[in-house]
Amino acid sequence: MIDDLFAREAGDVQWLAPGVCLLPGYLLPELEPLLDALREVLAAAPLRRVNTPSGQPLSVAMSNCGALGWVSTAQGYCYVREDPQSGQPWPALPPLLQRLSWQAAQRAGFADFAADACLINRYRPGARMGLHQDRDEADFRQPIVSFSLGLPATFLLGGLQRRDRVQRLRLQHGDALVWGGPARLRYHGILPLEAGEHPRMGAQRINLTLRRAAP
Ligand code: MD3
Ligand code: FE
Image (tube, rainbow, N blue to C red; front, side, top):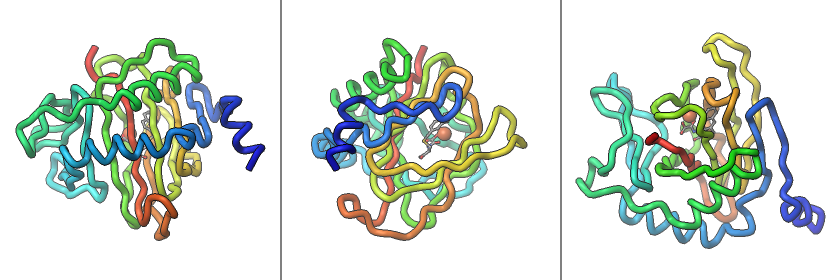
């Protein structure tokens, strides 16, 4: 326990691959204020199931905060300023999320990361995310910062081509991951979430991805 705390305070940073940086337990010291902020966001923009452009329902429920939010429409995927469900702007990015994402990026060597979009993904047991690339953002030189909360998940890290070999990696409650540089366009996904009950979060995993969507 003391060792864990020490590792966190020392700012434990693990490079998993070029451009892929894991900060184990990064969120834990500020978990409660983070969950408070998340609760407020989700009260204003509730999680909802969305369909892919081809009409298939995604197993993950989604919402957003920040100036821009990622949506899936019949026309394709894009970032928009308003929540299509309410017609209102997305809830503002909580200052805590702005700071935590900037600081995580900084530790991974990306200076001046200023997120303008935060996609919130909620996985119930059985929910998954197929192998994909994130390419709806304007500038691929900007990293993506991901925060994991709740049940553990098996993350799939592929290569720059869909056919490339896939590595597996376990993401735990409180972990932060920073993806940038040579890893920014790697294929990735999440295996179906295993059933379980997380002591703080219940039977779910929540992932926040903080992005710079606009140039
Ligand atoms: C690697 N989310 O929202 S986060 C997504 O756990 C997404 O919900 C997953 O993939 C989740 O698009 C994985 C980790 C992540 C996010 C962005 C990446 C890994 C990435 C961009 C490039 C390479
Ligand atoms: Fe992704």
